[in-house]
Image 1: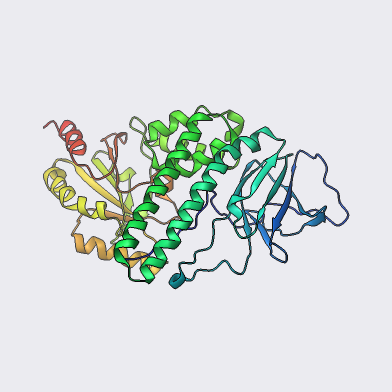
Image 2: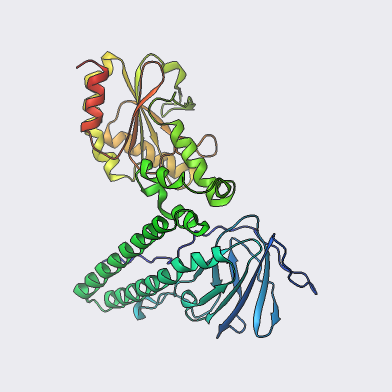
Amino acid sequence: MKTVYLIIGTAMLFFGRGAESCKAGEKPGADPDYTVVKIKMADAAGYKIDFYPATTDTYREENGYRLYRFKIPYNRTYLLVIRNPSFKVIPQEGVIPPPQLTLFLKRGAEITIEGDAKMPVLARVTSSDADVMEYEIFRAKQAQIEYRLWEATGRQVKLEAGKDTAGAAAMAQKARDILEEKSAWEREFVKEHPQSWGALEIFGLFYQHMDSGEAWAIFKNFPAAYKEAGMGKEIAGFFAALHATQPGNPVLAFKQEGIDGKPVDLDALKGRVLIIDFWGSWCGPCRRSHPHLKAVYEKYRNKGLEIIGIAQEGGTGKSRDSLWREAVREDGIPWLHVLNDPEKLDLVKAYSVTAFPTKLIIDREGKIVFRLTGSSSEALDRKLQEMFNY
C-alpha cells in the first residue's frame, strides 16, 4: 500500500515578504495597519517561529511572551510554523510532524497564542477582536479534527511499516472519514457565518470544487469590502473569468502555436461549430472520453465541426511537451491541439477551468452555447444534435 503524506492545515502556504518586524526600541501601538501577536509556547526555547506568508522571525520578549508586530496589507489567514528539529518523518516508527497552527490576522488586532511547541495546532488563541474570535470558533474544532487525522496517519504509516496490510487499510479508511468530517465542517461554518472574514478565508479552500452556481450564490453575499484584496479579490477574479465563459457570452479569442507548429487561431475558425476540450495526459476521465469524442468528430466534422484540445501538463518545458505529444499520439486524436503555456497566455486560468475534462461548445457566430465539466457524454450529444438539426 502506498503511503501519502499530508501537510495538515487549513491555510494555503505562500512564500514571500508580507510583513514588517518591529524595530529596536519600538513599542506596539494601536496602529490600524499593524497586527500584534503575542506567543507563549512551552518547550519552544531556541526554536524559530515563522509566519507564512510573512517571513520575519524578529520579535522581542515581554513578560514571558514573544511579541511580533506585523504590518499586513489585508486581513487573512497565516500559518504559524515552529521549527522544532524533532519534527521529522520516520516512517518505520510511524512518526509524522504534527499539524501546525493556522490563525486569522486582522489589521489593528492583538492576538495571544498559548500552547505547547510540540503540538502547535492545539494552542489556545484569544483576542478582543470579534472577527478573530469568530474564526476561532472554526479553528478550535478544526484543530481537534486535524489532531485526530494526524494520529490516524501516523498509525497507518506504522502499520504499513510492520506489514500489517489489513490494519493499515482500516486506518487509511479512518483517515478518509476524518477528512470528510473536516470538509463537512468547513462547509458548515461558511453556511452558518455567511458574512464573516474567517468564512471567506475558509470558502477559499473549497469553492473551486463546488458547483459554480452554488459557489457563486455563497460568494455574492459576502460584503463588497471583503472582495477588494487578498482571498476575496482572488475569488472575485475567478468568478469574473467564469462568468465571461458561461453560455451566452462571446468566446475568448486566442492564437497559439498548435502541435504541428501551425497557429491555432480562434478568429479564423469563425463560421464553424467548435468544441474546446480542456484535458491532460495525466487525467484518466479525459483520456477515457477520447473514443466518444472521436466518434463525435467523425460524425460532424464534414458538417462544420472542429475540436481544439487544450492540454494542461505539469513538469518542465521539455517533459510537458513530450507528455502532451505522446498522449495525443497514443489516443489517436486527430483534431487541433494546443499545449497551455501559462507564461504566454494561461488559457486554463482565462477560462476558469478548475476540473478536467471541461468542454465548451462555440456556435458559428463565436458565442459560447454550452459548458460541461466531467466526462458525461449525453448532454454534449444532445446539444450537438440540436445545433446540427438532428
